[in-house]
Amino acid sequence: MSGRELIAAYKIWLLFGALAEVVTGTGFGRCPAYPSLPNFDAQRMTGIWYEVERSFYLVEIAASCTRLNVTLNDRGYFQITVDSVNRWTGSQSTSYGIGIPSYNGSSVFRYKLNNRMPYLIGRLLPGAGQYNILFTDYDQFALVWSCSSVSLAHSDRIWVLGRKQEIEADVRVQIYAIMQELRLDPDRLFISKNTNCTDSLEAE
Ligand SMILES: *[C@@H]1O[C@H](CO)[C@@H](O)[C@H](O)[C@H]1NC(C)=O
Ligand SMILES: *[C@@H]1O[C@H](CO)[C@@H](O)[C@H](O)[C@H]1NC(C)=O
Ligand SMILES: *[C@@H]1O[C@H](CO)[C@@H](O)[C@H](O)[C@H]1NC(C)=O
Image (cartoon, rainbow, N blue to C red; front, top):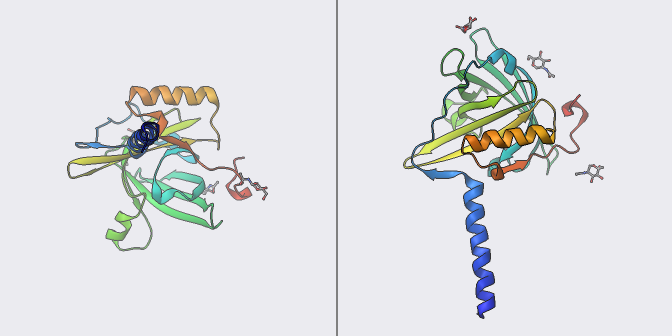
């Protein structure tokens, strides 16, 4: 290998190394603990949300046009219907889940799929776990975060939900600033695929 080739190879290695770190969101130690959003109003979280951006997650790589319909039941639990389209096969899928706040009025909740499925499998399916609505203005966007500890390490995921399928640039700047305050790297986010969504999943 010539010197130049070696440097090129090294640069590629660096690029992949840096990328892997940015992309995976893994770290040593337990999950960082974000507190519940002060004065969180669960009622105002209800309604339709679109997934606008999210961190990389292999299992969801083909999902597009992801839309959530959030309602509250009389126990104060979130009932969440998630519709998405597999952009490789075009098939639409719907999952039903329930979000149980850690206490009444908390923005931290445990999410589990509500399918008729053995508990263990339901728990292992993508989506189940501990979630935190880190920030929301209720009318435009919500920043949702989930983290799981695996022995000595943790892995977290981030979603930006919008009331519309796109978020305007000035709002996006605000969201990224909030993320930086929370020590979450906005570079980890990918724009969700919301092109060519069918009419039923399109924003009004
Ligand atoms: C959202 O869910 C509620 C309750 O199931 C339903 O009444 C409403 O029509 C749904 N909204 C949309 C846009 O699908
Ligand atoms: C939760 O708190 C709100 C306001 O403090 C109250 O109106 C509501 O009834 C409570 N819900 C439950 C399930 O305790
Ligand atoms: C959307 O669909 C149109 C017509 O089927 C196609 O020409 C276009 O390439 C699609 N766009 C994307 C981004 O998939």
